[in-house]
Length: 74
Image (cartoon, rainbow, N blue to C red; front, side, top):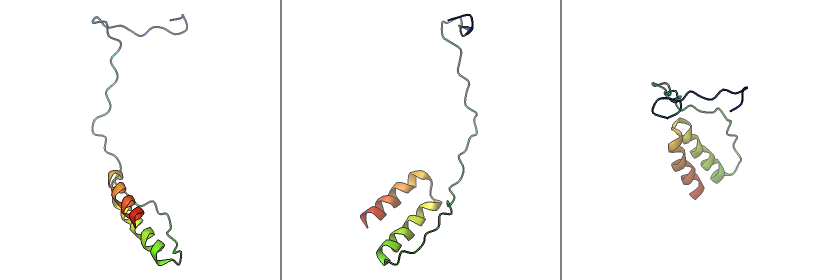
């Protein structure tokens, strides 16, 4: 490299520096509603589908797909 940027330390086995381990014990936040208002449209079919989307509020993201597909199918 250059004088401005030193080269990383090389270990005896020839590998570069070991990457730092991620902190253990990380837990993602629990699912929570976004608080987005669902204003009725006046169309019963559309309103029913919007209400079904509310079911995704309390699911982890991997559960959203099932709800979205259900709403899309009608």
